[in-house]
Amino acid sequence: MNERTRAYLRGRFGDYYRRAGVDPPPEAHEREWGYVPWTEGPGETYVRHNAMLDMGDLSQFLARERPRHVYFSAGRYDDPGAATMDQKGWRSSDLIFDLDADHLPGTDPSDSYAEMLDTCKDALFRLLSFLEDDFAFAELDVVFSGSRGYHVHVRDDSVARLDSDARREIVDYVRGIGLEFDRLVEEETVAGSVGRESPASNRYLPTDGGWGARVHEELLDLLAAVRDSPKSEALERLQTYEGIGEGRAEAAYNLTQDRFVEIERGNLSAHNVFDTLAQQVARDVIEAQQAPIDEPVSTDTNRLIRLPGSLHGGSGLAVRPVERSKLDEFDPLVDAIPETFRGHDITIEVTDGGVVELDGDSFTLEERVATVPEYLGVFLMSRGRAEKAKE
Image 1 (cartoon, rainbow, N blue to C red):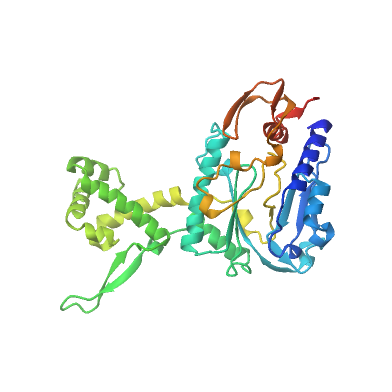
Image 2: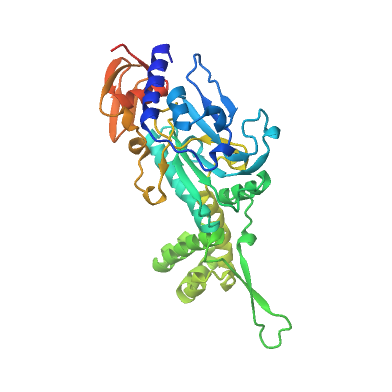
């Protein structure tokens, strides 16, 4: 990035901050603050160990310094401006989750930016299902990171003072790490038959929540399809599962015809073939439905995270809070474009051409001097794909 480009972006970031209202997080004075200025050279200078008292009024600081990136800590401290973590005096921390489209399993490097963000949003919905349904967290904020993913800030009192090990247990749960099938199963004691000295027990997949209910739902869909298929097709499908030969496939098919209510109840004791299928479906469900979060972000009680409302210096897009009820319709490549950068064109020199999808349009750019909408120019310059040309 040359000096003309850097000066232009710094100036326009300042224009954004003078117009935008950026709200500080709760307990802002108890948090550490960090930022990256627009410095020369290929690397970045990371300024941290600041308290809000060191920076002054947040709006004035942002308008004055026009930083490339802005962060605040998940942790709250007695002395957030102290030079070392030991001196800060940790009090509590938000629980932060980070989803990055670059690191999602199954993401194809050939996918477009928009496709990667769609994949990341799907993972976000899976994460929110765990946080809202399994953990019943109520105090959480969803934020588009400004680049390739999403952050979720959980501020429930129940997690505020958890240490790293306890946070890792939550991480392992949402990622499906170390989940053993038998731990998903509940046992229910039933009355023994006449002459039996001890009661018997049935094994059930829970149907009211958690990983067990996710497995049960998938298993129910599978066996409902088996029930409704021609018998030959159903038997062939069942035999694709490990340990299910012709005889056991026949038994599973008969179970769907005669005792489907037991399948709906999740009663694995209805027939051992049901248990066998459930264990294999469980492996598939855990792989498909786990939330592939960045573990170190969630386990680190001192993590710095991007300030919602700030600009991402690697994209020129806003770090945009998203209301939970509007997440379905949120399009980051439209809704995170700052209004400051709309409505006029600028001249840039494209150094890395190609197709760019932004604001609902697709731009095919050649490596030459071109006049483009400013939001596109800012995006390309921030990502190192263009330099500011002379007007």
